[in-house]
Length: 106
Length: 115
Image: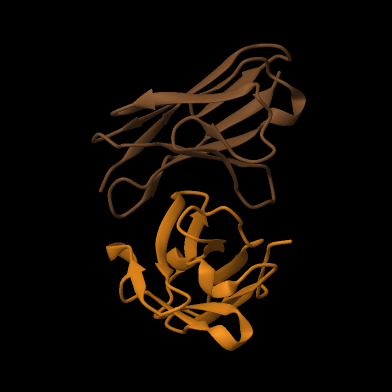
């Protein structure tokens, strides 16, 4: 089973600040997918196939990476971006999620 | 619009079983698999498996074999997940999601296992 380790586990960012969340895989994966979850709601698809934004996702978000290291970046933090972000790999069965990064507004 | 409606919260005793439903609407049910995901505070998100809504074929995470059983009723566009031999470790929120890309999620069903 591929283990995904996200860092940091929690962080706070000020409005306008650049944010980077990292997801490291225990073995190489072809793509990484990201989900956003706000308290009390279901996860939402956010970035798929490493760098493609899901429908409705603001273009201040971007995704990148390859092999065992992937990242989600917010170019300029906004209040609505406060949430928990999870990475997901579907390259190897069983599909596995990262432990999540809780992003708060400073 | 695509919607996945899940059944309500369950309170179950250890050793018993529960069956959660996920009713789909707003799209052709048999065109997409239904996947199931478990969320706990401690373990985060865990992928359980998926069911081919057309054929009924299933694919399980090895960890959940013997624990979860996925079925489907095409006539009502509803997928089901039965959890058996419940223990407190099965207490969680269980989500259904559309397809293998999880592009739409249900609101979740909270299962609490307690004597």
